[in-house]
Every structure is written in structure tokens, then in C-alpha cells.
Length: 347
Image (cartoon, rainbow, N blue to C red; front, side, top):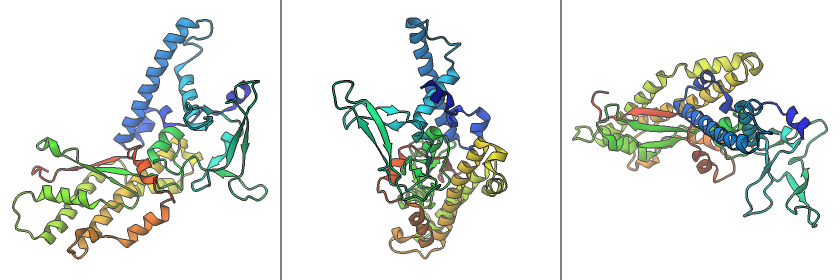
């Protein structure tokens, strides 16, 4: 196996990024996730090396088995292995499969593209795979590249941390969180109120009702229509204030992406630009969505406020999988947009 393992390139996971490279994501949420994962890997390495050096000093040493080599091995396992678990209920197993790990990803490809043949005699472990057979998941012409899907329900944050890249045509897992906070801790019971926002930029009605109830918690001379319109614009302005605090604008990032190739600016820079421009697009759509709803005629049922143009964005990118949204949310958001509690008069 050594010639093969020596041939495997060092994985490009964000786990191996420098502090400066991580800061280029412009997301404290991602910075925290990456740092937590780095600390975890470091702690596992330190614990393992103490055990291995103590019991197998002739085989292991910190000089030969460095932390960097351990990280590379761990990330290779996360990003290049196949699930080789024998059957349902068996302990989870993953294996490196030469050549199969060279096949590139494309979303929406059928997943039934490989199977394993296992030994059924008593000559060896019956659960040991003997062969790995791959089937092209789609009809292909000669010299046409074959793709498989690594997953169609992974969050963008999950791709960047575990896979080391963000698929260019993969928008299903783009999520941000919108969170109300009290900068003066006046209302601590309300500071953790948050909601999820996806690629359409549509903020759930329940969150808007809560935000507006905070803004107009005391007696107001405004009627319902005025409170809703003013409340939505207030939230839009607060989101815009957060947006302006970011080091670069969406236009800056898109310009650099448009005028530079990955080879020219480097892999990590290109991935950082791709990542941060995508969550900035969600922020832009949130603002547009709020303006649209604020300008709409106030209906008796506020839940009827919908933007058909924004809905078409979801229909365009949403995969045929009912679980994709919840699965992506489990891995959290690309960034947390913090807006000041409207009850904080000093804001």
C-alpha cells in the first residue's frame, strides 16, 4: 500500500489552513468551527502518541510521526474513503479504494454506482471486501469524464471542513443564521433568539413577528400596517449595518472571482472568496426580501406575504430530496448575522 499512500496528495481541508487563511472566510462562525476541530485533532494526537511511544517505542516517535502527518492522515480518511461497512448494524468501517478516490464530484448524480464483493468461505474474514466494482451512474461517451456525487445533503460548511472545498454548482447547503442580541445585555432572555435563512433570503414569519413585537412592545400610535412596514425596514437596516462591518463587499468578492483563476490566486484564496460571496448573496436576498414584503399591501393574513421571484430561486436549486434542508442545518450555518435587539434604545 505504501506506493499508493505516498502518491496521495496532501488534502486541502480547511483544517490545515493558517490563521490568516481562515480569517479570509470573514466568518467568526466558521473560524470557531475550524479552530474547535483543530483543537480536537491535536488532543487526539497527543493522547495517542503518549500511548504508542510508551508501548511501541521501536515503532513510534514524535520525530517520525509528526502532528502534521497525523492531520494529513485524518483529513485523508475524512475526504477520500468509501463506506465499506459490511451490513446494517455493523460497526462503521471506511476504506481507501485506489482509483475510485480519483473520481470527481457533481451534484445530482445517482448514488447506486458501486458495490463490494466479500469472501463467503472460511478461508478468511467473511466481512473482508475482496473487490470493489464501480458502475458509471450515467450513460457516457468515450473519453467523457465520469462523475459521482459525494453527497447531495451536505451543508456548505460541512463541505469546506471535511471535504476541503465548496462545489461550485452546489447551493442547497448555503445557510446563515439571523440572531437578535442585546449589546448591553438588557434583555438576556431574548439574546439567543435566532432563525435559519437559506438561499432564497426568506426570513420566517415567526421571526419577523417576534422582532416587531420587541420593537413595539410598548403602546404605539402606529396601526398594524405601519408597525409591520416600519419593523421590516428597521430589520433590513440592522442587517445592512452588519453587512457593512464585513471587510469586503459582495461586489468586491465577485469581481476578484471573475478576474482571477484558482491557479492565479491559489486554492485557499479561491475557496475563501467562493464561500464568503455565497453567504453575502443570502444577506443581499434577505434585504431584498424585506423590502419586497414591506412594500406589499398589508393582507389580513400576514403569512400570505410571498415573493414568487424569490420562490423560483429555491425551485431552481432545491434537489429532489425532502431531507436535504434539515440535514444541512444539522451542520450549522456559514455565518451568524447579528442584529441588535430593537428594544435597545441606545442602538
